[in-house]
Amino acid sequence: MRLLAWMPRWLGDAVHGSPALAALRTVPGLERLDVAAPEAHGAYYRALGWGHGFVSTTPLSGLVQRIRSGNYGAAVLLPRSFRTAWILLRAGVRIRLGIPDQGRGVFLTQKVSYADS
Image 1: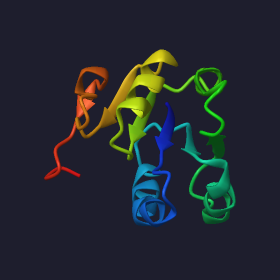
Image 2 (image 1 turned 180 degrees about the vertical axis):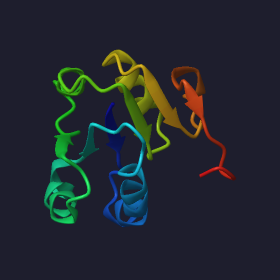
Image 3 (image 1 turned 90 degrees about the horizontal axis):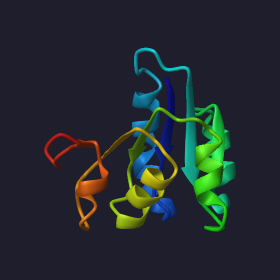
């Protein structure tokens, strides 16, 4: 399975979310793990080496196509924004996992609670 981990846009939040990347590498059947984040954080994620590739979430223009071209079967959304879930739906990612905040629950196929996260 090809998995996309959409990381937060604020660097401090991204650092706190980094252990999630380490855990995602252990998903059974994982073929590829790519990280989606602002281009400004690309060097940080590349240095960690926990993902196979990097998808820049900036600029927004062309983002749906960049994600679609990755043929991801699933995505984990660490940001809790409506926009991230909407973009992944439009990009055709079949499994979209995240916390159903900000009215985005309708776009998620797998919902996790704060207690689960």
